[in-house]
Every structure is written in structure tokens, then in C-alpha cells.
Image 1 (cartoon, rainbow over the protein chains, first blue to last red):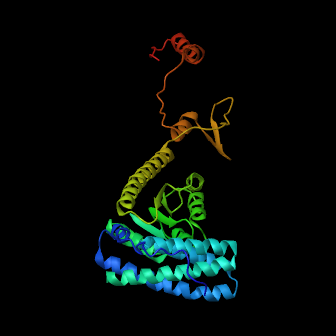
Image 2 (cartoon, chains in turn brown, red; image 1 turned 180 degrees about the vertical axis):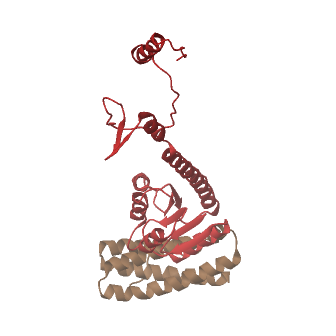
Image 3 (spheres, helix red, strand yellow; image 1 turned 135 degrees about the horizontal axis):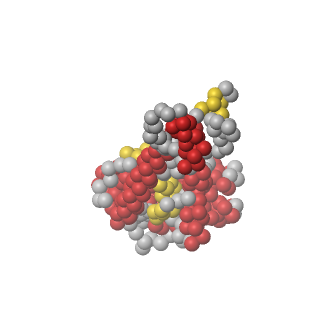
Length: 120
Length: 209
């Protein structure tokens, strides 16, 4: 896997204000959404290697688009940007860019996972 | 209101569902545009909240289909989008969207948009009710229309194959008009006066016409 690039460790992985605004501060709902995001993102990320191997660039684009959206919904801005890169790389059918975007997105996702674990 | 939410992204879908239910509305959720279209054809919804980009049928095409089927009953369409370009907003409005909400959601903004939706759908329901009343009233209004075949001698009207109706009877049945009988000056001179003169000539007492 390519070395992760473009991650900014100083940037908060999850902006909890976004989650609070979306849920009106409902703690149970915040936890439910965190769980939903983590499970869905995990599934989608697992599908990426398979999609890349089969050169399913449109599927990669759609995964990138979906993860961009859900990361944004949960307040994970850096992850959303990384997955936006994946969406664009998939659209461009650029394998090098796709691999880099997967690495970056995965790294950001790990940071989000740690941050959301503290929420529970 | 009955609200249908079409959103393929699970977190946004759950957020929208909880928010709209929290505002007191009845909510159904679907995960893609085709499922939304099937649901809209099966049951009436006051509001459709739809993501723009979805697999199968996107929000824009969904909106076009909702508008193409007519506006009775009216379905208020809100498109969810992160898009901000002028061209995108114009495309959404031209497809028939009533409003837009940015993602990620702001609770207060979504609530305000649904407030507007409630106002518009109420106006539409009132209008629909009044149109129905007007149509019923029109059905009861009797009007005379078209060419009436009339006998040039006795002036009876040819109503159907073997039926000739007196003009008073025909007009009364096909309109709100009624008749009161009198004699015009020409007919008095032509018809009534000769009879009276004849009666006077025979020496019988006159009777007023």
C-alpha cells in the first residue's frame, strides 16, 4: 500500500459541533450515528481493494462519494476531503491516484475511529 | 405531514429521519431514487426530501417525474445537496424542486423549510377543495347550447327522433328560465282582435282578453 500523504495530524479528526447540531445534542443519537458511520465505512473500505483489482472505477467513484458524504455528516472533515480525492481519482480512472487516496482515506478513517471511540 | 425521505447515505438518512420525526411528521425512508419513485406512485406524500445524487434514479430525475404526473395532490420537493453552484440550483428549480437544504443538515434550517412546506401544501389542499366545489356547481348549472332544430310553423323543438317539444317545456328543462304567458301586440291584432270582433258581431257579451 502506498505511503499515506496529505494527512494533517493537527487537524481534529471529528468536529463534534457538527454532530451536536445534527442531533440537537441528543447523546444517544450521536452514539447511534457514530456506530452507523463506522460500520458502513468499514464495509465500504473493505470493498475497495476488490474494486481496484477488477478495475471497477465507477464503483470506486461511488464509494468515494458515499464516504465523503457520510464523513461530512459525522463532522469528519479531513476524512471527507480524503474520500473526495478518492471520488475524483475514480472518476479519472487514475490507479496511482486511487491507491494514494485509499491510503490517505484509510489513515483518516483510523483517526476518526479513535475519536469516535472517546465519544462512547 | 406525510414525508418521504430518499437518501442513500446511512448517516444522513438517519439524521433526516430523526429530525423530521422529531418535528412531529409521519416519515418513511427509502435508500434510492427508484424505491422513492415506486413509493410515490403507491401512496400520496405531502413532502419529498431527496438527496441529489443517488444510485439508479437521481434526485433531479425523481423531481421531474413527480411534476410530470400532475399536481393533484401537490408534493413539496426539497432537494438535499452539498452543491452550491448557481447552475445546479437553477437545474434543481427547473426540474421542479421547491426548496434546497445543504448537507450536513442544520436542524433549525430543516425545520424552517418544513414549515414553508406545510404552508404551501395547506394552500394547495384549500385550492383543490375549492376547485372541486366549483366543478360540482358547474355540473348543476343548466345551459342551453348549440343549434336547436325548431319547426318553422309551430315552433316546437325537435328534441329526439320522434319527440317534438313545446319551446316553453324545452327551455324550462334545459335552463333556469321559466315562462309567464301574455300576448304581443302583433298577435293581438292578428289573432285575438278578429275573434273579439266576431263575437261582438254575433251580439254576444265581450270578454276581456
